[in-house]
Image 1 (spheres, rainbow, N blue to C red):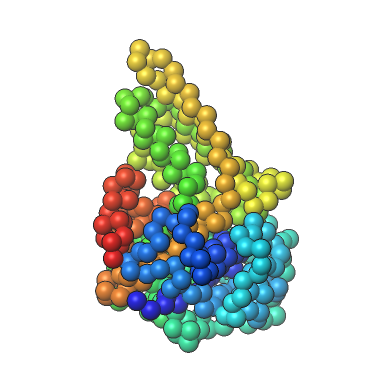
Image 2: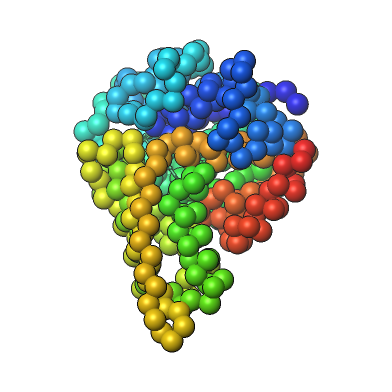
Length: 350
Ligand SMILES: NC(=O)c1ccc[n+]([C@@H]2O[C@H](COP(=O)([O-])OP(=O)(O)OC[C@H]3O[C@@H](n4cnc5c(N)ncnc54)[C@H](O)[C@@H]3O)[C@@H](O)[C@H]2O)c1
């Protein structure tokens, strides 16, 4: 099927796990555990190539991807015992709203370096797919890179909660040009969203009445440092991902806590109260601990292959079924089982 040339916007922790994960699965022993679809849309993982990246950090720009991805404040838990080799360039992108004051303490922005022409670079590297991994709340920057992808004829995977793919006007623009888009906000492979949905779904299936629901996320990386000040779009996205399972009026809390002792690991505490026969209470407490970044990469690798397959077949616009399975703020919400069946049927057997 050929290679899939990918550009990453925001060479942070998710990008680091994605790059190391691709290398992990590319070895001669062809490790396959941990993958939902070793082959998807006819593409193997080894077909994915990260050819360039965009960032704004002084320590990352004008370096190769492999030099830049290990720079502070990236602190993702390493998958490999060695450093990846990737000579693709990291370009200085425009900052827009990507670097709010509360994130400026973590790195020095390359203020004296002019931003490149993003569309030019995407064309030069013959990029097929742009993956957006900007800090949450980067709404202007997401719109900017999304429109650059459109101009350069690249598919766009929006992994962050900014409203982009949900916007019908955007869907039509991409549809008209035959370019696929997916988003918004990535659901991790086995993350807090899917666990919360699974518990709520089980309670409904067993005839329980859900009375209260709470989800508290705790982490210690820049993603969580950002949530202290700019979690609004993430909260909207997370509430949206649960709406289908929670009847109107049920008290529902979702929160984030930044804890420097947590580094790359995320902890989530779920506290769900329901009533069953005769009004008797069933309380469920669940604790998730996961390495959040590879967990997100496990979904990103599937979306990259799905949008490339759709692009190969000249189908543009929102890939609704893929979004329903892999994105929190999917424009169309389906039950997870149904979304999985649709993904498997459309792309899993190719
Ligand atoms: N499981 C998960 O980790 C998960 C799940 C869903 C969504 N996400 C989202 O993915 C995004 C990335 O997360 P992360 O942990 O890698 O964040 P991060 O803070 O580690 O990385 C963000 C990167 O973007 C760069 N950046 C900022 N402004 C930029 C601009 N204008 N142009 C180019 N680069 C710019 C920063 O320098 C940094 O390298 C976040 O929005 C996060 O909420 C993550």
